[in-house]
Image: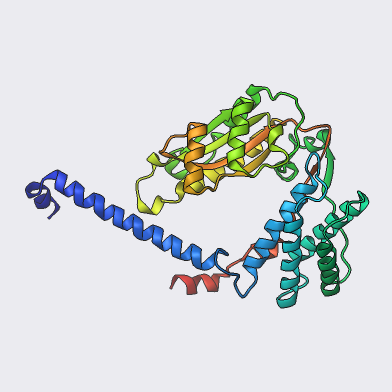
Length: 344
């Protein structure tokens, strides 16, 4: 049948219909993705299990953690965010579980924020203190958290240890001194990351290294998520993924999967070469995407994965404590009897 079709129908006509069928299939796939995202994400509302509310609380307390670890923490920072965070914690405790590990940590970060400003004799918005007292009434005694203070020597002390020690010692660093990073360290880090696995070894990842301070400043200004430390970056790495290596609707998200693995390998490689880095979000709307492409010189066939601000840390600095979920929360083991049910 295919042979007859090819014989009697001109190839341009076949290509025309094939192209439009693939476009329709791709549109259906993206609509499928969009429906799932809108329904399950927190764009529209929180769900009954509180998963979305917890995620919002984590995002907000992490902003406060980052503020407390800045090279020069600005007194009075994030007060609007703090009001939101306290309200969200009270809401969660009222409707869900006061013993949730992330709610406990969020409450401790709030207490650390209050304590920090008290110790520096800074008068916070009265509404924050009032809401904090309401939180204590709901939650009970709250012990303040403490962001991690560390020396440069200790931070890099395990770069040649076992993978368990090495990987556990890496964190996002947002404080850099004015020491120049030897470009060879960046090159060597990229070289190590070339061993990252990719779909059918198509190696979609691409890397751009920026060294000019003015260009780095402009890029980070557009990126917008580096307030308080971006100006200290000595080098900037942007990772992208080439779409041209993919050829089916089912691979529409593969660039981000391959790119995410590559980005993590770059972070490990930088840590191994004793370069501090902080990975920065490249999730953009169309307007910002176009602006970043123009300033960065990124091809249309490539998608942004992430940026990494790089620098040499000072002799002592702070790291955000960044509470992780427990293994029990993250991991589900499927018993063999359940597997039979799933595949039948």
